Amino acid sequence: MEINEIKSRLSILTVLSYYGLAPDHNHRLLCPFHKDTTPSLQVYPSTGTWTCFSSNCKAGSGDVIEFIRLKEKTGKHEAIVKAQSLIDKALPASLPEPLKTEPAKAQNLNALFESLATALQKSAKARDYLKSRNLAPP
Ligand SMILES: [Zn+2]
Image (tube, rainbow, N blue to C red):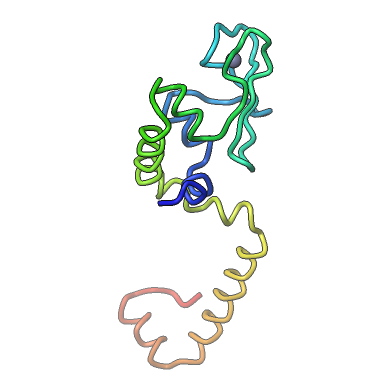
């Protein structure tokens, strides 16, 4: 898997929750890379990046892979492997995400559903099937 594909498929929020970290509603949290008393770490879910704004912190900023690399205290290659394993685990939970970020697509699905529901009512075969399954037509 290409690094860009990993970055586009692995949400920074998924990575945070994997490490038991939860950002507040401003997407800020206590930085896990230095002794933090006020939330200094800002995450940017739309770009999958983060920045620690504390001057006491050497982490600076990075992406999901850099976050994993720092958390695991490992090399970049190991971090990429870890990132891929998180994608595999996170897949079901992250599926609705495109619908949230792409309302146009969700509308297309609504239109598709409506056209299918209309088509269904025109089909005697489909109505009979619903009846046989004890399902109410939409
Ligand atoms: Zn920090």
